[in-house]
Image (tube, rainbow, N blue to C red; front, top):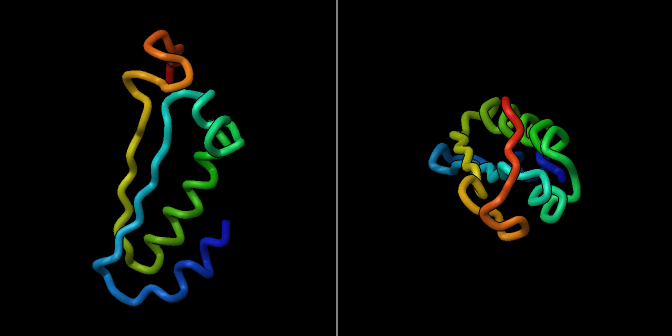
Length: 79
């Protein structure tokens, strides 16, 4: 992921950055080839770089009610 080169050409504040995360570990593994913690660390860099140049960032969490891999019976560890 080359965040800095993608953000270099941004010149308008109307551009927003969207982060899509998942609540389920298996979904992260299947779609991003990493665990939750690694993914959050990657998101942090994107969010910090985006905000540093004045972009708005929105975060979305998918797979909170049903996982396409695990169905309705998913384990959510306590925070």
